[in-house]
Image 1: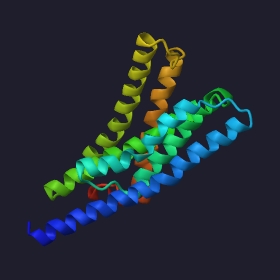
Image 2: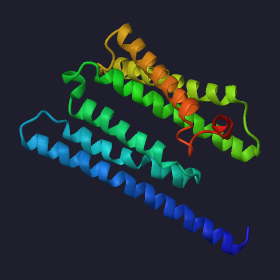
Image 3: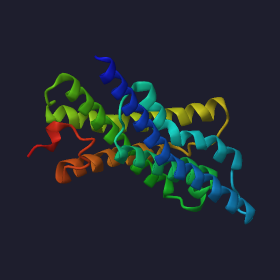
Image 4: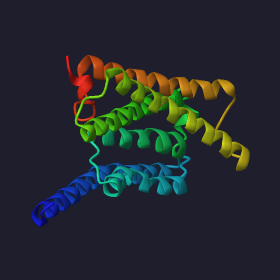
Length: 210
């Protein structure tokens, strides 16, 4: 690679990281402002947890910098809204307690996000190989990415309950509902890609044909 091309690539990566950081900024600010306002009004808000969550909004930026890859904005936006709905609203604002089914919908939404991550991985493999992957392979990667992360999350909750004494899990039904929700989210994501061919910046070439 020539010096000019290297500098252009470096500049492009810097611009991409800056764009990702700016996309995350309003979400992080909204998180802190809403928590402060609700606490001022007398609501029960986990302020220390809120502050600990703030760096999570810049995880996509860190991924782009560390792995030198581009994360399409639909995936980033899904991650940012998931962080708001789950860790922030669900845990820091106690929405999980006020709306019992909120947890199910958060896990469903996470399944969509994680299936998209699986599709993006398949897309990157296609780009590296220079040939489309079999459709069944890309779909399997997407679905099993959602299922694997759903199961891994439940294992982490179980470990936290046993080792730290938290109360993240509420019986077998709660665990299985969460895994089923994540799996359904993965299936919904696959249906969107197959029927609407969206999001085009994430889906592998093999799924955009036809």
